[in-house]
Image (cartoon, rainbow, N blue to C red):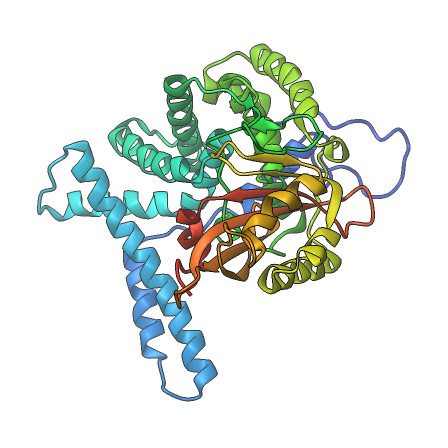
Length: 436
């Protein structure tokens, strides 16, 4: 039976004025997205349920055939890792909060149930903290801070809002506290004496910017096209860098409202602001974002890597391993930009970039670093590559730099227009070894 009100917010649906066909179910895209999230809320995760699952999976282990053994072991490992995280959360929250853990069964059940609850939302909360800060390392710390605050405030959780909304509110406030303490704002890169940076304008320098592993995104590829696109697109490096230009409250309002699809009322409640203040913050935030996004991405549309771009990545890795500067240069756009946060080095234009890498890739150069190998990965929904170098006189390839690539989406899409290079301590987060 049709209804003339939105099932999410209760507002009247727009009149169809005599049109035929299927009518609207929701009054807005935000309500449609919220309804989907509620339908796909994870089923109640309990510690006993995890233990039972591990027992069933272990009971299915057989040595042959090899494919069946591998599949069951992989499933078992994932469940054990999840149980380990739940147990660690239960231990750390009670230890860090100063609460004493008594042997009473009801106290232990409350701790483990709380840990199981928070584990369901760990990936979502970490991605949210990353959007707010632009730093993978800080997002990990903020997840722990969020769960610790939630543990301390668990007595005040009345269940009037969902646990997900409650945790998002706590995480947002933890992020705002960090942003107030640091008071950092993007600057412009400055020339380094004796270095050819190219003729282009200095890009924004965001020293705290870090990449985010695709494997830790809250939605898996293909699970739901619309929600997956929103999840991945709102973590793209170009958008993350633009968000860092927003004041803290504008940033939070934009992320909660536009990236997560919360209603204006929910956003206002989470930020302890009025709806009018939230709408005003959004009106100021959106033009700022457009001003700092790449020109071809001003409409902020989802752009997934293509097969052609994957082929370019493979040629890029092969060129690096062969020390073939000409082949590498052929894959770069003429106005390519290279930045290396947190380092002060930056280059605009293919010629300046090639001049910079020539001294380390040319075996005849006194500054020759050595021979290279590369492994592909994914960061922020983009193609990326982990580069390793074997220095002269050694036999081990060591992690050197993680490159996240952006391609020309306004043209043929077969040229690299931006390379953002990051330090090697992040390799393990991407499942990459530190040595080959």
